Length: 126
Image 1: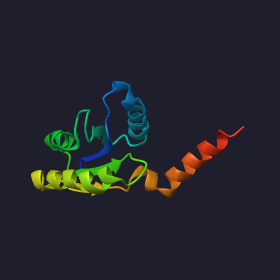
Image 2 (image 1 turned 135 degrees about the horizontal axis):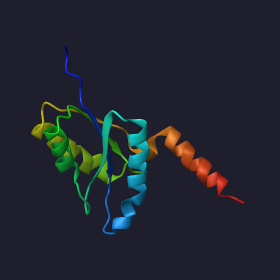
Image 3 (image 1 turned 90 degrees about the vertical axis):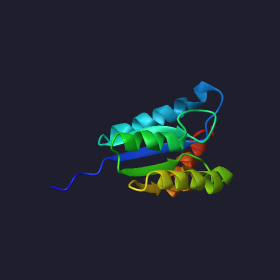
Image 4 (image 1 turned 135 degrees about the vertical axis):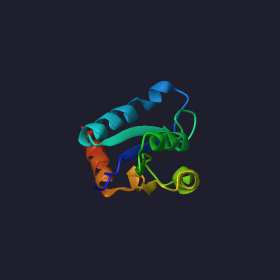
């Protein structure tokens, strides 16, 4: 019998000095986890907060994860998504060659996400 892949999803965000900054990301993590009960859903950060992406990936591999998807929870494709994230992903792939790693587009680049934000913005006009 073929062993089932153990899947994980990392929501990748910038990070901030203020701990409360991460609250909406924690709520998002909870919403995604509720929709994907068979997937380990967690947060990882570029800087200023922990865990950082390479460390979280290493923890997941140690727990038997074989299939990882990273979703950049950024509104746009700035330098962090275009330069910093690919370097981190390269490190994860080099450190864990047995791990399948996928990177989704930045959340803000997705048409459905932009539509939802537009709906919210339009709905705020009296």
